[in-house]
Length: 252
Image (cartoon, rainbow, N blue to C red; front, side):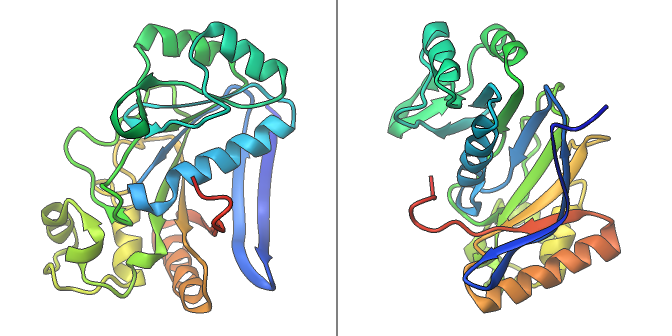
């Protein structure tokens, strides 16, 4: 099967700084991407960046959630008519049930299944972490659908060099997983271990395609630390990853 989108050893950046580093990712028609990780790590921004890119290619893009996601303005599909209108206009559609604090929660399963069947690509936010840049999932997390083909685990590079107690959601689980105290500073080695663990970033991934996204690569020190983390993921755990950075205009 030929992928509709393939990135192979791609590197890119802004202002002479590398932001995407040796990215390898294949997306096929009707793929379902589940994006997991902390609220402050950049999941939603990444989700909408993917959505814009795919919609620009003329694909019917559905963005939704199995937990909660920030409700957008112009792209919200309240019903089937709005969904069809957005796709006809060449735009991506965001679907969910309106909730408190400007959020959307998961659609009823029958409706989500029906809308997913009409889309060329589905992007689902499947996790959260109270706006902290890294986390260890609880027993019920992440909420991945059986249809998910690709899982992207997102973490924020702002977590590196800071104590676990300041940056990691579900601190007790993180300390147990890493064998570290709450005052331990998060290093590239510890972050790579957390993301590659089947009790951490790879939880419930199984045989799905899996990649790591390290967001907030917005200064030279973070880029260096991010590249160290990616190298550890590749060499020790055979996990591919990418560095990303979004400026203020792009952030969701």
